[in-house]
Image (tube, rainbow, N blue to C red; front, side, top):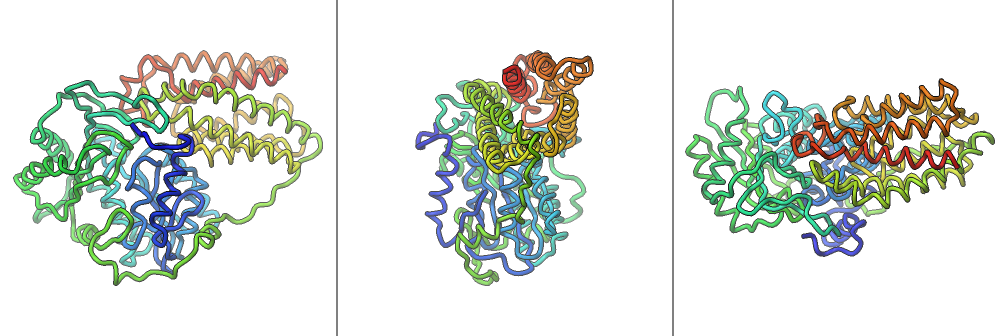
Length: 578
């Protein structure tokens, strides 16, 4: 259990503050994460890694010469926002472009992909690579759906060393993709992990059993097997990874980088006992192990578990794997010969992370007249989400990471603050909704955060700031938000996501408005359709996202995102009736 905390809601921020103080002089904090205390040397590609908290040393622990230029830090097990990823990238940028890289999780892919779009719009060349090393989460014919677990270590290390060597952005991106293509991992858990402030773990493992194929965000494994001895577990891990060895490796000796990773509460002595047999089995399989890493490198709070990662090397990958690095949590060789930029203060780094200024426009008088209603709606949603936080987290933990309730609370509160500020600024209806969407995405993080943020931004853009929107305008705005969700989320109706509640909502809303109902009556009927559809998702198997590898466990439980959307729709119906 995660015992030491003050306010569980600020656990990530508090931990980051302590990390920055402990390593002052090596790293500095910026909005959204950390960067090196010395600027990226001019012309060098900056590599920015990241993801949710709870995985230390990943991700902020590997910022330093020879390794990452910056790390984006999200809430526990929650993707950072696109705003945060873009801010860290600006602060890390040295003129050679930025490569952003994370594990392959829906929230990270969405947020870091959007950050790339934002950076390119500002004239900063940026790329994104997702790590897909977990062989248990999808078959060999669906490699793009595999999660990123401890393979982050090998892929990040090679990309960073290639950048340090002076490769341009195309070359660094290719290095990351080549390392990813040659990296495979398999993990097991003996116990689940507990979120700060929670009184129970996200999942439990029965006595005498291990859970095979875990995720690093508290997701349980895809199957249970009898608890083995260390030697038997070594054979299970080695056989599982070697069975997925990449093809077309060419002629010559087989050389691999290896990472035996502890997930939080497995003692180093236990890892060494396990490595003793893993190393022998790898050599018996004809593999030469190059500079293995045995220890905690990508953790999952207090989870009891281990994972084995192998990266099949070529000449370049071996050189990059062996290259020196000096970060708070990962050191190898000497970085004395690595050229670095001048030192900078936290204030200078924070200033570099800021986006270009954007002027907030005032709305027309009739458009501003509806902004108090937007604020009242946001206040009602905040109250509803606060009361539903635990239940939404419980639903989400059945086949996910249990953070949905907390994310909805953080997002809705940020949206309320932004709507109130927009009202004070004299912005119109569309401007207030757009501001709420941007704040929701920025503070909530994760998949639902970026989707809610993008949808509200699209709704606000359609409503505009010039005229008082009517019922038909609201229907068109809901359609605009739905279109954005379809584009960004990559999901379809029936995949067991929030879309399964939104599609019947928007269909019913349009039908009732076109039939002549006033907006409050039409919205009330549409909200009922959304809640009914959300309940029906209990009969669906998830086909996308973190819950997909645990589809069978999800049966009988409704989707958390669909459920929360139904709650929000019902809450706003009450506001409209009032």
